[in-house]
Length: 125
Image (cartoon, rainbow, N blue to C red; front, side, top):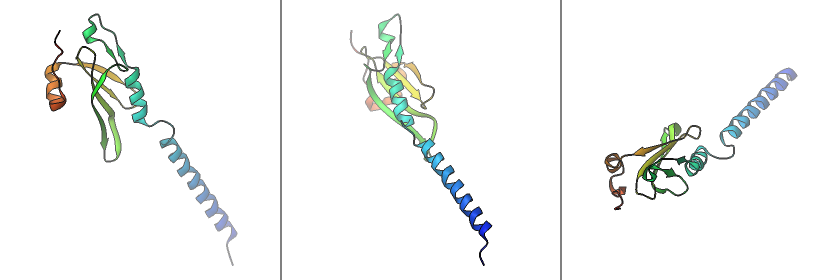
């Protein structure tokens, strides 16, 4: 009346699919998010320079703007972009996708264009 092998095969297949779905979910939602990892990387960022105006330390920088890049609900190459100023009023841009962070000096002429109303001029000495 009932095919036992069909039910056992179907039960095995559904179990395997359930385990695979859970493993995928757990992998994507494990621990820190990519944004959390990128923000931690920002705080740990340091650039040493002979001229202290061009040195950067994420823990003491003032965040001017923070952008998260998403594309159709999926993360793009850069997930987090942070524009920040050091204590001398110099701008830096930090980018990270949670794997490979980078920090670069941002000239005032570019910072003015990118940040628009968030831009503040150089500090007076």
